[in-house]
Length: 100
Image (cartoon, rainbow, N blue to C red; front, side):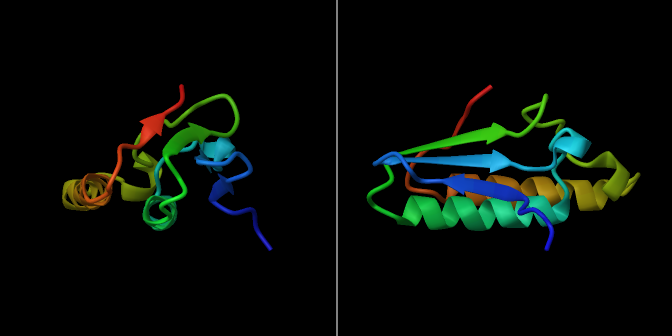
């Protein structure tokens, strides 16, 4: 079984830490990682016991941005991924805070 793309740590009451887990790609946002991250954010923000959601990255980089190797020169796909991400983050009951 492969490593999860997003690690979820809820060991501190009221706090959820989501860690992007693609350190070999400097946590670049692939379509699969974005989908999993959206799922995790939605699940954590739906939990009323979670008051703070921290987003961080495994390895030496927080996030390199969209995975350009995956999307190539497909501007429409890039725009669709960006739009999906914005829709996910804007629809949550609270803000997502990146930890750099």
